[in-house]
Image 1: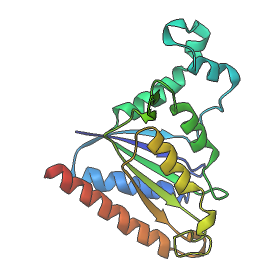
Image 2 (image 1 turned 120 degrees about the vertical axis):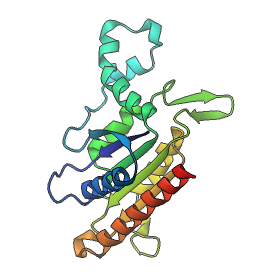
Image 3 (image 1 turned 90 degrees about the vertical axis):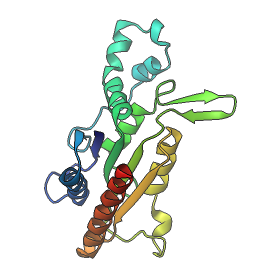
Image 4 (image 1 turned 30 degrees about the vertical axis):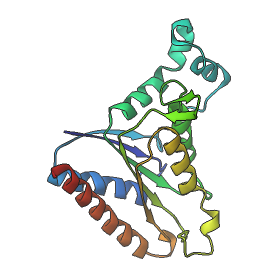
Length: 207
């Protein structure tokens, strides 16, 4: 059975294009194959921003952590555990001010953990969350595609590709709903891509 982790980054519960795309992905998958789905909503229930004490706990060896330090990172441990258990990760990411919603960025800060999701080696940093497939489903008010004059302002996809790769999540497919503020053409195109991505993944599973 496939273990799917969904992450919704939108603070909107109604009319969210990225949420609709995540739901469509899961529904299409479940219509054709079994899956266990863990849903994490970092848009409406964002993780707390990191403070000095929590960061200090991250960098304290496990056997040296105090009870207070262990309590401070318990939530982060839970988030990391969800990532470690997942085979497929589906991220719904609306573009906010050319980048990520703050809740999704806070989630990243909790799961980017030295010794848990990456480590330093003689050859540089090494991601530890390998062998997983990631789908990033974005919604953008404008058109930030490679052919658009606004492409250089897209700090969302490059950042996500970099930080996910740093954690070992280097098999990433981006599906963008472009220009949603100007109509539904971009949404319809993204829906077609989602359907195609699910069909391709399930064919590979069956092979």
